[in-house]
Amino acid sequence: MEHLDRRLPVAFLLLLPLLSVSCVSNKKTTVSWCVLSDAEQQKCLDLAGNATARKIRGTLQCVRGLNTRDCLNKIKNGTADAASMFADDVYAAGFCHGLELAAGESHNGVDGFSYYVVAMARRSSSDLSLLEMHERSSCHPGIRTTVGWTVPIGFLVNTSQISIGEQCNFPRAVGNFFGYSCVPGVKDVQHDPRGNNPKNLCEACIGDDNDRHICANNHRERHYGEAGALRCVAENLGDVAFVKHTTIFENLDGKNQESWALDLELEDLKLLCPDGTEAGLDEFDRCHLAAVPANAVVVRMEDKCRVWKFLERLQNAFGNATEGFRLFSSAGYGESDVLFNDATHHLQRVLGSYTSWLGPTYTTMLQAFECEGFC
Ligand SMILES: *[C@@H]1O[C@H](CO)[C@@H](O)[C@H](O)[C@H]1NC(C)=O
Ligand SMILES: *[C@@H]1O[C@H](CO)[C@@H](O)[C@H](O)[C@H]1NC(C)=O
Ligand SMILES: *[C@@H]1O[C@H](CO)[C@@H](O)[C@H](O)[C@H]1NC(C)=O
Ligand SMILES: *[C@@H]1O[C@H](CO)[C@@H](O)[C@H](O)[C@H]1NC(C)=O
Image (tube, rainbow, N blue to C red):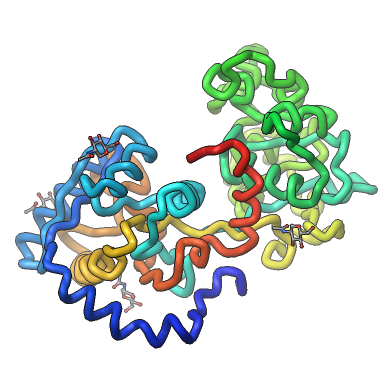
């Protein structure tokens, strides 16, 4: 996990005493959190109320944002101070808005790692290499997802297999590259406003039991999501599925009762590695396309220290609570992963820049999309 390492340059360490002084001298004591749903808003208000009741220094306010982009704008112009975001949005926050990170989730208690993106294939498919995917067939959990789009397409661009050209039309380039694929949602108006995304990107999709909803960006498409992409390869409709390293283990041994999953055995599948070799399913720590970091708390640069100190007080009070308000539980809010991921063990401070949290491999893959001007 060397790429998620957060070793600091010596020069920065020398500056640390200075930075902590500026943290203390910052008189602002309110942190306004940008929330995106009723569930998040409720948990934020409960946290604020419980923090006040426990006399924790600082005041939490909850500001409703329309979407992630709106929250980024609010943090940038000071109408909000912080929000927790997915890795892809962290990149937009840093690259487009000059924002930084105060803290990130640690799920394993050691680092900010969340999961690996892997390329999975049937063991019986010989002559298959991640460095020669031209004309092959592929199964993706969904359009514009980290696992199913950003990472695999970023990899194919970075290895010069796909060239995007001046028009910066990713679906067209991907459609020209693969023989056929299932990329659920690629023909939705939202992702295909002109209606000219290549049809072959839906040709490995199967829709529902009645052959309807083919290529839908939801579970009615039976090849949708990570389990669906795995199914697509298991059923021999695709040569390769882009999934999480955990996907296979979540669908084996009766955990998924659908017949395709019950028929599946570990020995039937293998991983394709970025260097063109292959590996067993349990070798994901050396054979993956990217290590995706956990969610992190986006703030303005000058608030890095102040917001961290506040979060530190909050998690000391509520991070390990077994009764009353629990920071890393979403029970009672009707959804999972409200404000923070339920798998969070603790929040760790991010001292380096946002790219240190994302890691060089993952950052490189996101950079492949720069021409889209997502700012
Ligand atoms: C503390 O949190 C709980 C939910 O865990 C909530 O029901 C309660 O209203 C909160 N207390 C205050 C004072 O806001
Ligand atoms: C800050 O940005 C938000 C979101 O774009 C906007 O709604 C709000 O009007 C802005 N406020 C100020 C003071 O610029
Ligand atoms: C909860 O307790 C464990 C074990 O004592 C500790 O490692 C962890 O950091 C604590 N978590 C928080 C959020 O304080
Ligand atoms: C991107 O490509 C360069 C050169 O081909 C290679 O050195 C680098 O490791 C690649 N990065 C990733 C993330 O695959």
